[in-house]
Length: 482
Image (tube, rainbow, N blue to C red):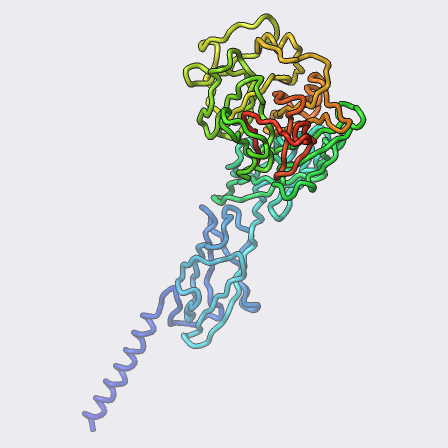
């Protein structure tokens, strides 16, 4: 019996030792033995940049609340650290230090003595992140910045719709990626502004409202719908009162900066406008010249025809590889084209390479005469000083003239007059003024009398004198737009 008693005593003693050892081992931050606390959390903290935020814990409402973070803007992965009281184990999240999405309420689950679950809701006051664009202006007029990432300006007289320069008020740290000059052509389509903010590229849609078409105030009627389907940036206008004369018909095709210019034909194989437009590659076809000058033609950056047959400088319109239009006096030397400065007065001097500047356009075509240059309607003396020859420039005769003009912001106007069925056409000075009134800073005259013609989507505009008779004239090329 003594032996049995002794063994039992040892067994009970050993059990007591074993129980004491387990309680001690469970003493750590994720809960453990000892006296169990009713409060699961000793503390809950979060990193806020270089600082630490401490949450307020309500064990009755089962909430863990952080205040407003001062240094953290991205709340989707906040580093949170839980320190547990004895007897409680953190179940969710899985680790005592975890990245938690605090943009929405987060669920925190603890186990009491490894058995009973308690669920807490953890929240934070999410700091308001300002919009990347706080405000915008054009010419001192405020634009509206919408929650849908739109910037809308109400157009007013004096604003250049094709060159809207925005002044932006940006949040700290925000930068403009494109366009860097914050300039937009908003006549035919909305613009796209990209701003980088908090390492994210944000795209804004830039719009203009209440724009009034100045062509209507100039007495032109929008007849675009009569010519089938056209790109939004090509419009067609008609007047029955060209130069203020009743029953005087003229058409204008207006091409926005989005349009592409091309020259159809090689200048040698003369064709009618109907033949040129057979390819159907363009929407607008406008005749070049018949025989007064030799058309210099550049297409896709290559000289199709140089001006070796011309003995003088001629005015030309061109488009460069970046899509910008220009007008210049040109002359070719040894397979290269050069532009020459404008002479305000004096006699004509034959050009030499040293006086010119190498010109490498994407597309180019010359005409009969430069009639408008640098916003100035040219006199006959100025034309002669720059081009040597006068082809009826400065006279007061009425003809069905044609011309192409360009604005400073890459809009193109193609004018074509009529001298059939009572319509008498315009004089060259009147044509120059018309192009200036349209907003052009430069314009080139092309065919006159019976040959001016312009087709849009293979439909005629003016009544061509020779076409009416069934014998349309052949010309060196057609200037085309799409």
